[in-house]
Image 1 (cartoon, helix red, strand yellow):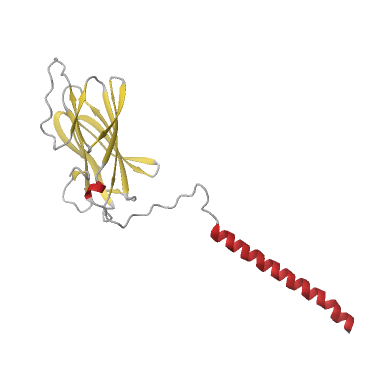
Image 2 (cartoon, rainbow, N blue to C red):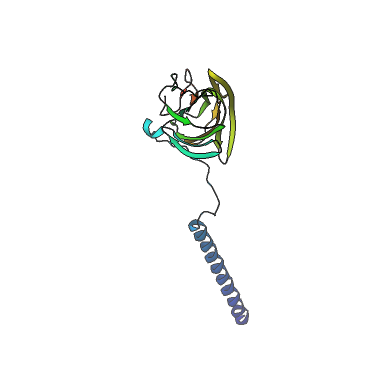
Length: 216
């Protein structure tokens, strides 16, 4: 009887030790999981800002790469409202500044062909989640895109002759999932006169299209 009791004690002791070791391992795993850093390369989904920013802070920032005659220049504009004014026309006379611009910046063109690639970024109000995107153009061809993640979605394109003004808008409202919006404009001015482009948008619920934030 005493030999059976003494034989069972080591078994109970082994079971207790095993239980304690398993419990300790579980606690360590929980602590490691809680304190482990985010896996490298993981990107959380975009969080829409709930804080309204001032109109000045929402104003579009415009960077452009302009090529003319084989040379390129990086230019920053105060708004997405730019005219391209040849220094001389085909007959050698000096071109006049455009008269149909609303504010905007005149950029002198000395040689053709000319192409301009704009990157326009701005912040949207929290209530603005969808909008038609476009441009008002004269004397040139434009292609308009919206950057969504790492891809650019082309939403509109159009052409207007010299002296003709045309508003080109995306046929449908574009989803704006990020609080910071990035638009791209590829504009090719024509050679025989003043060309210009003005970025436009029409948030859902607005009565008509207007200039981008900072140029409205």
